Image (cartoon, rainbow, N blue to C red; front, side, top):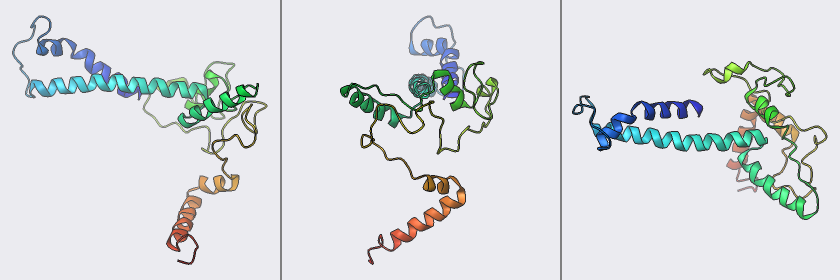
Length: 200
């Protein structure tokens, strides 16, 4: 997203004077349109670049805020409800996945941030954020780092308050491997083909 925002913003900055001149604002510093593409196409691309820079930068800010808070979009909505329920009981909600802003960023991007920050098991250098390269995540996608003392769940959430169910660890392990996923898909297909096991 950062690359898209930077590229779109650079397009807007580079074409600012020419776009204003073609729209009739400011001094006409340019001769009649000397390029092969029509001026209308240029203006449409310019407007699209501006809209993309604005929209994607808002989306980028929203998702970075979620990363710093240690939650997904769905968890953000759930956590608001958990916090309200805990407050009504006189308790305080604690997100067990929130390890602190810098630690959350370090784990999400799998990099080292500062000396006192919790580092991932195999961290990469900070400059890897600037390069278009593949960096492996620190997790397998099913188990995540939790705050010390909250390994069993969020603080202020009692049994039965959960809005989403925890996945069975055996299912998570089976689906974590490609072969397990393939076998699971065949099993699901067989169940669906039989009509859900109702003999139909």
